[in-house]
Figure 1 (cartoon, each protein chain N blue to C red):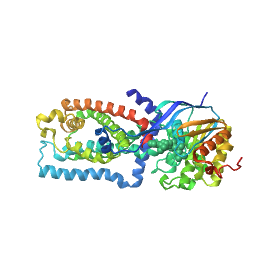
Figure 2 (cartoon, chains in turn cyan, brown):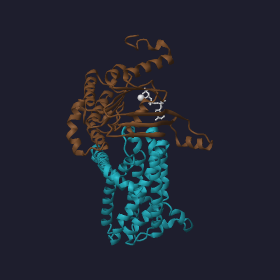
Figure 3 (cartoon, each protein chain N blue to C red):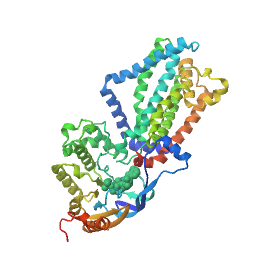
Figure 4 (cartoon, rainbow over the protein chains, first blue to last red):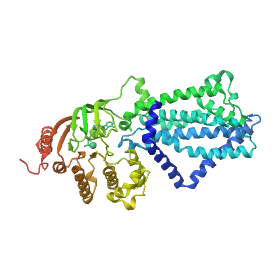
Length: 261
Length: 255
Ligand SMILES: Nc1ncnc2c1ncn2[C@@H]1O[C@H](COP(=O)(O)OP(=O)(O)OP(=O)(O)O)[C@@H](O)[C@H]1O
Ligand SMILES: [Mg+2]
């Protein structure tokens, strides 16, 4: 399966690159505000959520200011949510190509996920700016970031493969997606600390790979400690499982995409 | 070396699209989706340089045959082998991304077919000129007329240096001058010993152009041989099915 990737990139890398660049350019052309939104929207969300959960709900995040605590999770979460959502509709959006030319169809969800990296880059810059202005020290544990990010990407791709393939067969998947993402967000420690989850539920709760990933980001960025293995370890295992299932399912189903799309 | 080979190929489709909730209901009731065979047990071999015309009534499976050759769909049983680069299947609503401009689509199509960006750069002008779309090349495809779609589709397909060209009932959309241009291009192709498979209801075109004819009848290969014979066989089958009145005006010279 991993070996499937190398020829994919060799032969189709240029196409993936083109589809990705094209989307990015189109967004940029539509409006400079298109990218201003990428910065503004999370800032607005951040402000609102901060006020509500800090002052109304009085969520306790100890030493760390709530807004920083929130934003470290909101940035990666928003990436995964937007990437999954774009990837889910990517096959339908490219139906005209899929029914006319033979090519590996994974190209479309992959490119959809890559496109959203621009947004992630911009919001990460905002996060860094916020950290610096709030006097948050940068710890050496930042070197963990590439690993955490890799796990997040693989997980995002795995989920995207499953949902995009399902969406070809059942168009209501796209409609259910919003609900799915909302549930997923509330079951992830984005707006609250994971310690708020009752001890007895923690094992089940940690099965959500986003839990380990968010905890790992917070640990390394805000607290200067290594990723928490009890949740991040789970995240790695579940991610591997999700990816294998997603890749297999996609490969199995892609033969008939052109027939049902 | 055979260009296209079908070995006992059959293709089954499932009828009707579904929503997740409908699928769940079906599972709950132990019902299975309705299926039917669009092509049944087709075996054939096409040599490089052959120009094959495909005849058959609506819904007989002609487009399905081309899709199998193009590799966009896979046979349910049997084996399809194709040698050489295949141009994108040219049919109505060509393989383009509606939101992208003509130019961007040329690049994307080119890369899918394995051309390097530099190679596409070199062919770009020729493709645009052939399609006569200089003014509209930076307009999103969604604003193209069906004739413009077809021009671009045809132009891309013949300029990516394919070994196999598949044409599905499309020439009808082009205006007379462009049709003539397409025919000239196809003639050049013919002279270069490239393989073509053409689906058309225009029997004159097929008769003058193709070296071989296939008749697809209700999903089966009813005839394969010289084009004139294929047309005769097709007319015979039509008469058998619909009676003689159907064929009035179909023969230009009734025997
Ligand atoms: N993706 C699909 N899903 C389900 N059924 C399909 C699909 N594509 C084609 N069919 C069915 O398969 C049969 C053959 O279709 P096909 O498009 O190959 O016919 P055709 O010979 O090209 O007809 P026409 O002359 O009208 O273009 C038809 O009954 C059609 O409804
Ligand atoms: Mg057809």
